[in-house]
Image 1 (cartoon, one colour):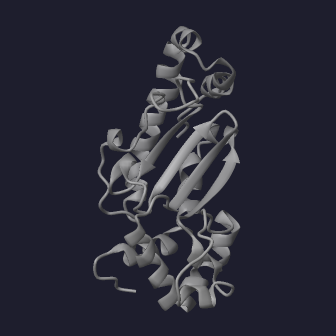
Image 2 (cartoon, rainbow, N blue to C red):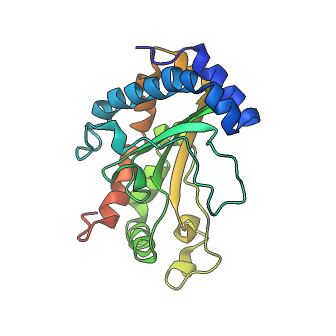
Length: 226
């Protein structure tokens, strides 16, 4: 199924240079009909495709879709709109940036799919760090999997400069122990949204993140089963 048409891309490509209420209101019908509604339908159809990987996700797309309107109350950037549309599909919905799921973002420049653990509490970081340290061979096999590397490349995330022992003793061998977050992503050309294979391509690529996501999810449970 094709969800979007070239008018959606045209709107998203013009938005960054016209990020103001006057322009947006003049083109609001285009946004509603060519961007927002197709994106909701796209997410609605994406959810059941992801359910085998995340059985706890719900069918209602509202729980996962972010609004295009920015909260500018405490931001120096006063542009009122995001330059993209996006959704975070995970058991905790769009507010859950800890549980591994699929974050998909569409802009005029590209399409992006992210996964992993974006925001972690100190306790959660320690849980993941302990899992990596204790199950180093399992973790290495996951991050060195050819499918994961070809799709996502590597785990990214801001790092601590110093860690307590025993982690500092093996940090050169496993530098990911220093990560504050653990995420990975892939970029696609924006024209992918015009393809009838859009969802199939995303699902196929996301499947290569699932084994690593399960590692992190297990590490974050009260009684890890790694």
